[in-house]
Length: 319
Image (cartoon, rainbow, N blue to C red):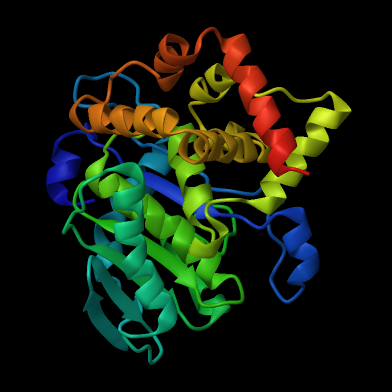
């Protein structure tokens, strides 16, 4: 945030997204410090929109949280930011505290992800920089986050958006590829689609966090949802996802279902893919466009029809 943003009395927003270790991750990565047992990203908004309406995401209501947000004005000039290696690769502005080649395979993959997202979603590409701040040492990263983002829970990576900057902060660890694909997806999307609904923002990030060879098929999510269907404890319902206004209220089922709707739209029929593409295009020009569920009712029929179709999709991919 800069001084001009503060002078606007928070009429624009700061948004935070973070990857938090799931319970299985705690078992696999015992070397990591204890983390909150929630998977996915957490988002927090600090302001009303330009018209004075509450934003989709939770506002900072406590004075100390607002003060913390104002304090972000110095984050991007902080002395403890990584800066040993600095290079530009496509839209990515990389800052690392260790030697990192511009042709490193992961950096090339993240650069290519920009085109993949553009082609898969029929979106334009942007030249707005996305800053990747990469820490070699997990403890250095955690100290940086605690110092500058004290309200965040512990996480492996986070995405921060201000009026002027898109940035990802991450520790270089065993799951860095997944984390950077997820958080960089947020950056690429936010550069061209402001006002992306929470559920769709997360569903797309879950879809694109996978290696390209996976074609968006998230085995863990598919197995989880298939199991919940067998238990009779879950049914797909897009309107429920659309009603979510705070990522803190999103459970692992919500993240999995958000991914599932995206996978169903992109990977089943050309008509559904085009419906999502048109929705994203309209969002670019009018963030208040009608929810996707309204378009699905017009294209596919009542919610019972789409629920049955998504159920069938989960049963097929979750086998």
